Length: 110
View 1 (cartoon, helix red, strand yellow):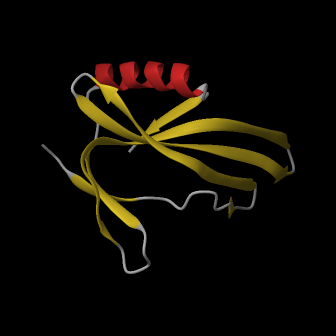
View 2 (view 1 turned 90 degrees about the horizontal axis):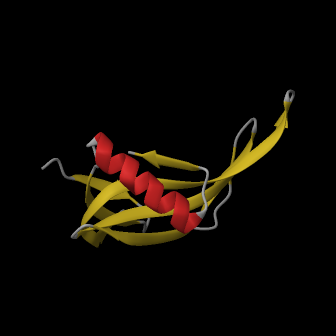
């Protein structure tokens, strides 16, 4: 098992970039088989580019949750231990599950 620490993003904090902005609005888990998958939902808006506007609703999947919020960073952000999902078939199934559950158009894995 390849477990890793994952620092949780701030919820409802807008991150700006040269082309627009994005943010996370929810943290949740979903049961997949006998394991819990940690995921975050967020949005992306592209509205300050020279070539058009757009946006999407997405999910970010750090992996299988092994220890939730087991410590905090010096800045006060939660840290969980996760096992990244590397199996392509499992990724496809989790993508299908989250697309149906969250109505997101993009699922990204770490």
